[in-house]
Image 1 (tube, one colour):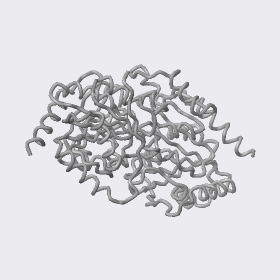
Image 2 (image 1 turned 60 degrees about the vertical axis):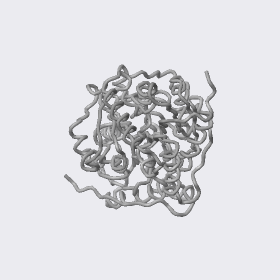
Image 3 (image 1 turned 45 degrees about the horizontal axis):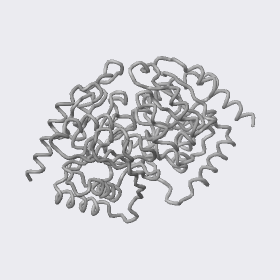
Image 4 (image 1 turned 90 degrees about the vertical axis):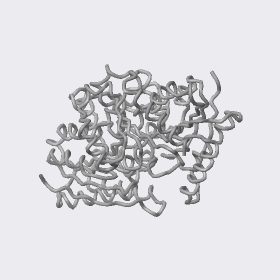
Length: 227
Length: 227
């Protein structure tokens, strides 16, 4: 197996996250790279979703993935099996990525891609429903996962994540019969925070609902490229 | 239903968490109050565990609960049904409790208890596997939950939480057949980080394995009181 490049990153000591996010966004626009920020709790299914999503996109787009974790490279190793460019970031105990860290990850990915343009880059953020919501990293699309086992009350407890994300993927749909999860109640709670939120339910593992998500993502990429 | 007292708390601006944790610990020792810090991801089952644990302890001990959340009082309302003293903390977007915030919660709980001594206080920390591990709040026992749906790879990705906790409760055991979760592999990974970790598997919802946990907790409380 290919060796995974791992980058130790540290938070920007200057309070200039929005400025750095803007710079990331400008550079990504220049290189026509669509950046997706993927957020959710530990174990919500972010890596499994990415693996399935890559399968759906890779014939059309050149893809890169930035994996962020406090420690280890288990997710990056899983993603590397898909044959796309992947970089592992270690956040030094920090519970989120800021724009500086994400920018460093994207740069390292570009080096890894050795000059070939990346059409789509996914950043798999650190598993956390609180802090990643507060940091713009320059993404064109913010996707959050909420897995069925986590429960339908999460919008009440972690509202900011639901407010700032463009798209909610309710994951692990195949386990819906095992948990007491009210999808309509969830949607009502989400709509109160973010009326424009796109909501889809899926199981990446069992390949249910994934086509709708991949179509939506392709549409968003094409709209962005046409701007 | 009884109105829940909600306290807005802010992080200590001084870098003196360990000092404040020590003060909390001294005060708790004086009042013979055993403090339990309950940590885990969003949706790991902390509140359900607490409800079941309270049932097992309340004939013997006077109990209080400090619920911490970014927003809402849904957990505090569930706990209030158990008839114990409960305080809701709001962390103002912060992803963990520090010793100052926990201390303020315990003080408010004492006021609520109107002079009666609390034997055991549970702090349900904010749902997060990263930051709560870094902040000593003065607890006599640190308990972490990892739910089966989150996966057996979490010790690799969030090692500090496993290193600092005294006891790991593998929760939602009733869903073990639905998920690809290797309990032996998990235990091996945990033991590499923390050889002394007490590990128990349970389902608080289906009341499986809960007696072992409650016996363990009672033993720890009695040992602490005998010191």
